[in-house]
Length: 248
Image 1 (tube, rainbow, N blue to C red):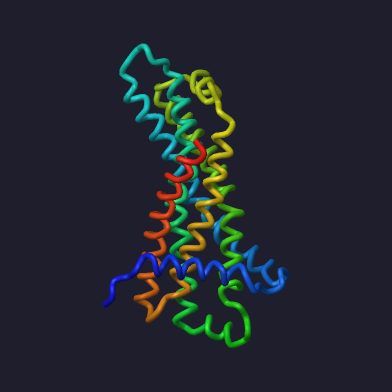
Image 2 (cartoon, rainbow, N blue to C red):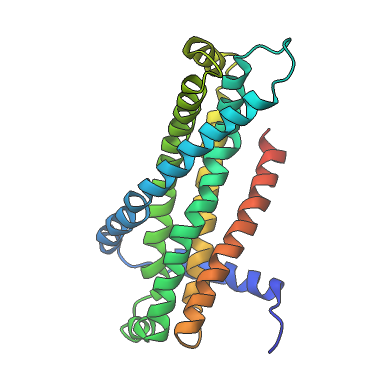
């Protein structure tokens, strides 16, 4: 079995994106598909994002309090660390990894199943640009819904830190709220939203690419889903590093 060539795969990915954004169908055809994808990608991800972000915020508060060994460091710094870690990394990046596992595998599995059952071939026979028809609604739904999920994740993570910190006796409510507001940098919120748009595009497009070019049977659909999650996570971490270098 020949080894996959990453440069060839990257070239095919760029051609795949070019086909998706050119020779489109009329916009009205995409509307219902877009709404359906928004429900599937956004609403169905609420529970896992809410649970994950709340516990991440709680754990961050507890771990930070545990490592505050010097009496010279004010306790309100727990709120500062939970806030900054949540906005800069935990909300956009950790949520993106969870998002890739749920949404990315779903997109790859759906398109892979359509490929092996020849539904994509049928669209092409009817003269429809299947790449654009199937992939564009997913990409636009992703870059619409994922930033909203990141905002929710940020709020719940900070709330989780508040609940864990105050109920555990690690910090008073006034100290935590003071830490949340202390030395706040507004650009961090903009930075998190920029990351969320980039991450959403990468997850949806890479997962769609993996599923669209599935060959074989049901076993290969599972392999495509696994590759979609793996490649999405690698792209996320690389993009996270590049954005940090460029924007911070």
